[in-house]
Length: 412
View 1 (tube, rainbow, N blue to C red):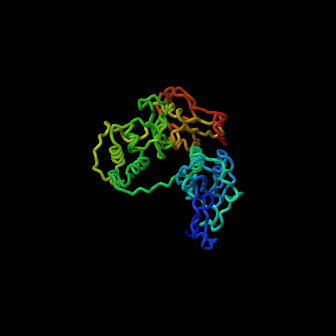
View 2: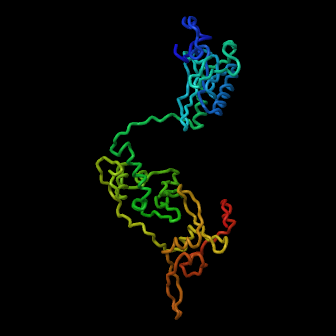
View 3: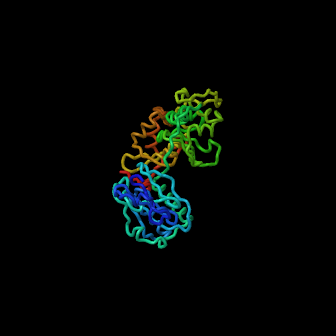
């Protein structure tokens, strides 16, 4: 029997091999093992002390306290019980924590064995019993465990380990070529590139999509999609979210769901590549390109278009906050997740944002004749109350300080 091997001893039906009595034992090599058939042992092979305590407490709550508890490499613990009848061992999968440490809980049962005395092979120190040893405790005095109880305890232990972050090790898959690129990364690269060039494809797919300068997102309203949701689709450089259906989508998903340009994922990805003016082979595509139909007519480049009622348009998104002089501008918009939020703009930033926007107002020339004069939209919106000469639009929305303090933000 080799160094640190487990030798069946007490409660074993077979006697020790003759050599065990013929030769002087070597304390550095001889370990004594107990064969499991009428006895069994829960082996908590976990290095997290808190988890070991929780699993041990779960075992003893279900079965009662056992007088035999053994420590090898602390905090790993073994608890000995008696079987109601022989059955095979029950165990969790071999799990691993993010730091690489292994975790497993098993009931060593019929045909298994565990070390009762000897030297731990890794620690180099003796195994120790926290109280009594197997030499002191009659087998009949041990609490009983049934197979049903064992399976319930091991299942609960696995749930504890997984909730603490343990998981099975992922098997590496051999890389192989596919028609859609190396190991399937063609679609991933297309979807990533699509988020860096949303302008080039989103307006072709959704001609009525609106760009939000404050967030960098394109929004597609449910009304324009012909559905009954109030929430929109948000296409943002950090991701695509259908807020109405509460799902995240890739660019390829979006093309398949809402376009007429493709009927398969490959066709959708090739259409996105065409709009991005990227050769699909640059993303690892090896199949034969298939022409995809284009929607007709194609929309123009998405240049900002002035609204028929620019004051009302601004009132949809912005509000004047009378905090100090000068006022601050509250900008209501959607975040990257497509959810409502707001940000604050200084008047100077607001003027720069709308630097190219004008509004036509009626005024009088030096002779008293009515004339239409274009003026910068941002300062006019901030400073002018309704006068009736801007197509009847309301004045800028004004929100008192107390109305926005409830959002958890205090403004200086």
